[in-house]
Image 1: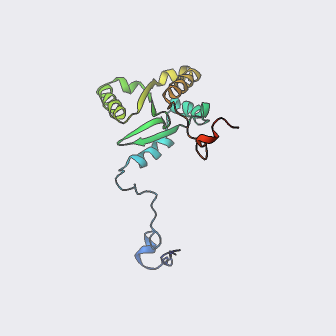
Image 2: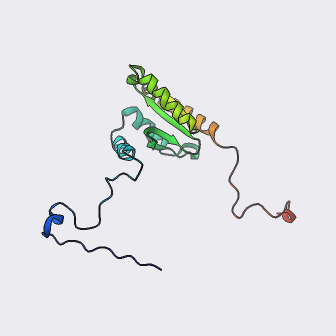
Image 3: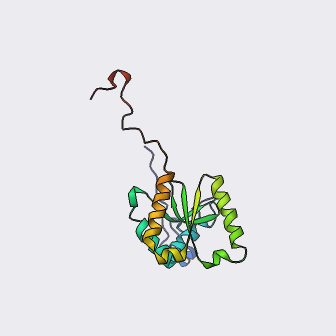
Length: 169
């Protein structure tokens, strides 16, 4: 077994390290993993700044309706998905009024194509629909996710019974 030693920490008041918060193990919380850019940092920020329709939808999706696990503000490439169900490969985007103005529809179409090339279906929901009837929106999201689930079931623990034991219980 290999052992690892922790580098010694600089004592308070010693040199520049202590003045600038250094001198110990580097804090990695603000450093994006190599090759991932700023999307992870931005996703964390967006989780703290969700819109009211996103908050309302998240309150329901976080309870894992029908056993479905959803993530909020999930990074995918250069994009951040409002909600994502990885088992169903389903992205849910809550679109406010800004999504129908200017070049936004074209940008959304490019984003949807990029997701589709990776096997992810994008479900776009108007923010006004969430505010008007969040329960109906949740039913629609769950139905879409269930329809996209794979048809096979995972193997039972230990695998299938041997051929000579088939039919015995």
